[in-house]
Length: 250
Image (cartoon, rainbow, N blue to C red; front, side):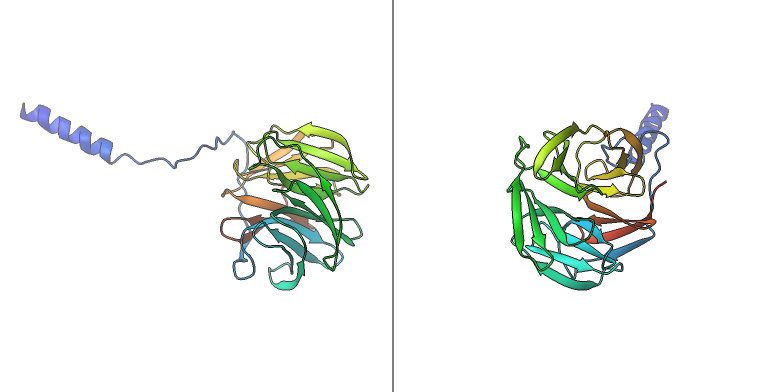
């Protein structure tokens, strides 16, 4: 009986010492690379809840929007504040500019609007994009290609990429490579799109037809904005107001 008791105690101790695996609902498919940042910049002293980012090639600067503030923040590439543009935008989730960098476009999630502004913050126009079935998961990202076509993504329910020409919808594509989408960026070098997913902790690259060209993982959730500066990729994270800089995935 003594031996049986000792074995029983040993099994209890062994089970209690078993290492717990990280709690994650993200399944990592084989062969997908997890990206590691070159640099992480804290933006918390400038803004909270960054939700979209865009590279202004004319000024060599970054435009960042926050869903908590009615302002567009212009930063240098090291995260220092250069300018703050006050606009009549609410719950802004994505930002982009025209090719010549003279007009700013943002998506306003709650109002389901795409709004355009001059660089001084003066509002030009708004376009209603009412595609979401869940008011908590609406418009999340926006980008413009070299032909001035506007592309808008809806977070989920349904998860879509919509294309507009002169304010008229000309196509919509169902996205199915993640559980949600948070931002989109047009890559003129390869004529394709990069999309970041908050929940899936994933970045994926699509061609013009929406076909998957590549996918990568990041080490955090709440990635809300993505843009590229030459061979570097910039991502802003909502939760801790940090900006992550990576080499551009190949």
